[in-house]
Length: 168
Image (cartoon, rainbow, N blue to C red; front, side, top):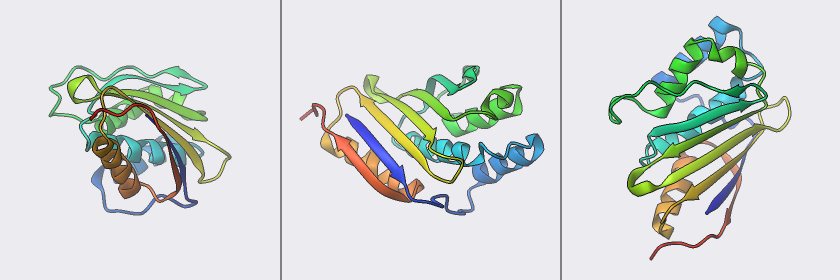
């Protein structure tokens, strides 16, 4: 199942989320300005998918820039993908991220479910293109839950679903 998401301009609501404030603090410390919108979107997508059980980061990278070091092994309930992203930004990985035009991540969820995500900066504006490919046996209810969480985290102008085969 493939979800193609077009966020609305200025889609980043100023919610009082602690991880969002920590992310902004890292931007100021590292002087990462252009990529801020891209990483806000990545963090919100990670948060949405994490709330649906996709908590293990199997792979992530930026384009250009390459792979970002994988998170240290943790018990799954002790850390979530946004926390891992914050830790990666505290390392030298932020240098690769600072020039990124796209961020790709593969997350694992329950029962061998996977989510492959690509967030692209369309222009040097607050507009991004998001693709979420859900792999495994998903029901329509599962996909709808992911869509609702994405809408909760991001103001979406358009969300298109490319129908794959759904489980009963």
